[in-house]
Image (tube, rainbow, N blue to C red; front, side):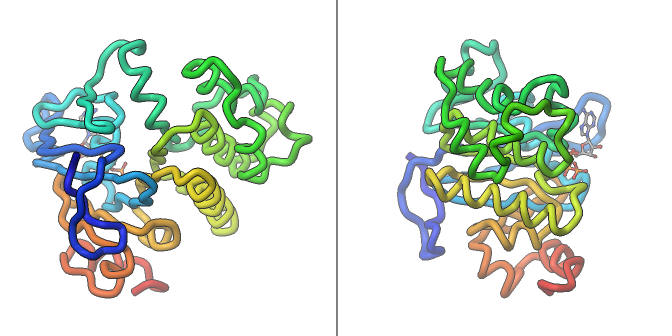
Length: 262
Ligand SMILES: Nc1ncnc2c1ncn2[C@@H]1O[C@H](COP(=O)(O)OP(=O)(O)OP(=O)(O)O)[C@@H](O)[C@H]1O
């Protein structure tokens, strides 16, 4: 059980975090300074949380630690109360059932020859031995039925991005962690991909942890915003409160870079 801020922003209440970390510290070999300097973060069931920060603030390193892809110097990551650390695939299967990942630029990480419906079904086949909610997932992200049998190489960038989101949702995870899911897309596609994430999250109450350097995406999609700066979390509040009255200079600087929200 972890104490995490209530979704409604009214103080703290006890609930089990789907994914949390405490006191994470990490220094890359040969680098003089740690990139994570005592990071603690918690995402409760059904919450949509944005992790924002400028380039180099440590977001991707934190994500890799949260996904048990990077062994950190010290600190702990827990999923549903159970410690998680990098290890053999079979030992992490329980964790991958709960937490799924949408990588940055999925179009380049999906096998271009694979068919859309197989790509989406693959995690569920591996983790559960069935096809998961492949059809519902593809419908929810607005991939038309005639494309379900198409090959990944025939998709546009925005379609591939939505397929990657459907793939993460299909096996029924409790949390989807998406790393810059709309970077590199033009504004109409950004809105579409953001909408797809929202639809899927609402459909099953799937929690989201969304990494972005764009506060406007965070504002549209998330109930809570966590600001990372220089390896630390400097602000962690309900989105509306943070946007209306940013407390930390780094949050103010990020807000100032988004004219429409400032
Ligand atoms: N494998 C690595 N080896 C050495 N240094 C690294 C490695 N990966 C990241 N870094 C450095 O750690 C710091 C934090 O990088 P990280 O990618 O975690 O930040 P970020 O906030 O995700 O940035 P971006 O938004 O550009 O992806 C940067 O200074 C980066 O150069």
